[in-house]
Image (tube, rainbow, N blue to C red):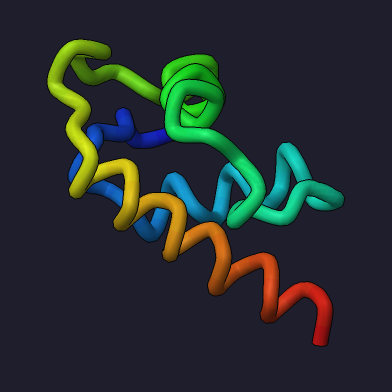
Length: 72
């Protein structure tokens, strides 16, 4: 059974975003769009209002790491 994802699960969110949007460079995504991408993940179960710039930055960096790994 999938685990519920919270804003603090930056690494897991980064992995899932890379799987869902493999062609998107995370560094080109605005935080408003990133917020939407995260809240639309199937396993996301946190309060959308609990996001903040630091959490979104952590998610963006985790996603960027996955993006770079996928590129080889």
